[in-house]
Amino acid sequence: MKISICDNCELTSKIKHKHCPLCFSKMRRSDGRPYTVRENIVNNNRNVFLFYTCVKCKREMEGKICLLCNKVGLLTISYNGKTEIVKRLNYLSDKFTNEEIKEILSQLNIDEKHLIYRNLASTKKLENKKDPMKASVSFFVALLIYITCLEITIGSFENEVYISYISNTIGNGIFSIFILLGLLYLFNASKIEKEFTVGKIGLVSGILHFIYIIILIFFQLQFKPMLILGFIFIGLTFIISQVVMMKRGKNA
Image 1 (cartoon, rainbow, N blue to C red):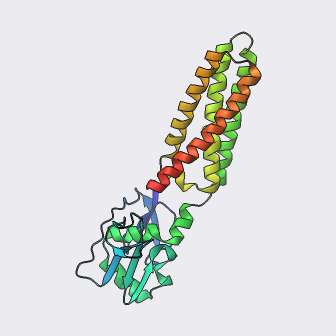
Image 2 (cartoon, one colour; image 1 turned 60 degrees about the horizontal axis):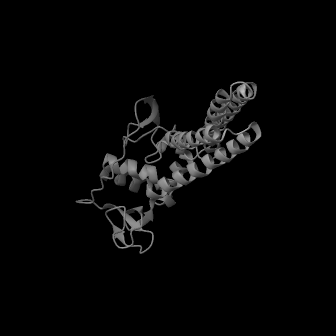
């Protein structure tokens, strides 16, 4: 995949940048993989300090989780008498001068540079950008598959009811997945890549629609009740998928 690389401070990003968000040097595009960030903070023998600030008790700590409050801390940088929570900055230049930034970056290791970059407000905004083109494709595929499966369902219901059940189940399941992906591409495209969202939605949809087809076969539902139950299970897929993703977000 193509990534942006800064030859000055060694920052890499899958987001396309013309200039480095840390040192403002020109970035080049090249094949590679984005850097895997490890929370490797070392504050020994330097006057640049990185630490976490507890969102509740405000104490400074080395680890990300406050042992007293059990709350997640916010990455904080301190240098030359200036201290700021990183997520409140779009760039380091919002708080520090060019000379200070140069000195800060010279004292940070590669993990710390990427950790700061990932927590900057400007990075979060770019990561959470919308992708209307992929959303449109997802919605189109969802409707195409659903309509195709619905035609098979209608055509085979009288003579081959089990084929009708299977076709309707497949159509509903795939429709649910692609509609949810389309909505995510509209509101938070980065979530799809970062949190294995496709797999989670697919698993939820697969389990629910397996239950759905068992109900169809067991109760031998007619066409109209089958469609109504199908829409109920599509709705359940939306709701449960959102709950799973929200729970994962809180644990991250």
